[in-house]
Length: 210
Image 1 (tube, rainbow, N blue to C red):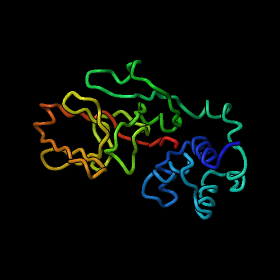
Image 2 (image 1 turned 180 degrees about the horizontal axis):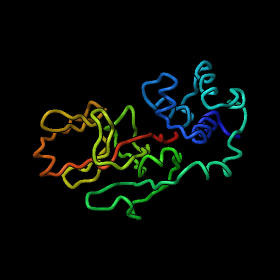
Image 3 (image 1 turned 45 degrees about the vertical axis):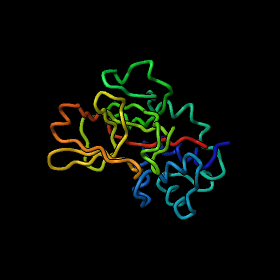
Image 4 (image 1 turned 135 degrees about the horizontal axis):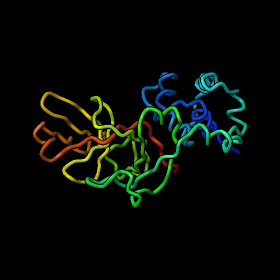
């Protein structure tokens, strides 16, 4: 029997929606609320569940009390794409390096059409309280991003870091969400000499259970 969260995730993928899109349609500022619903950490209020059922074209009672994933094997294969989840990304090592792959995740075909994706398992607490140690983030490969985006970046030949990007005149900052960590600030000269390289933008969070 599928849980409410599993039904929500199944219907979202079936319709080709991202967690960000659902959050925006329901009036939430970020995808973390949707992620918590799907992972079973919390459940939507009745009002939001009603709005969600309309958005996903499903009966509210069926979402809460039925197993809507029974057609998963027939539908998800057609509507989703499997991507690798990496345990680490290191400078000089291709993202596709087989030895780095620790798991797989599914993304919607709609999302897959927007670029090339990989998953990355987060280590450490620098992005709490939004992203926790052991969570998996879905990343679209790209070499630039907008100020305010959460990105994966390679710094000084070390393993990749997950940070919020801030752009300013003459350089960039890579900021932790956990205020116990100092910002990483780089001038344009630093970006070239260290080097500092953005390799992707975080599109979605897949939180761990428990």
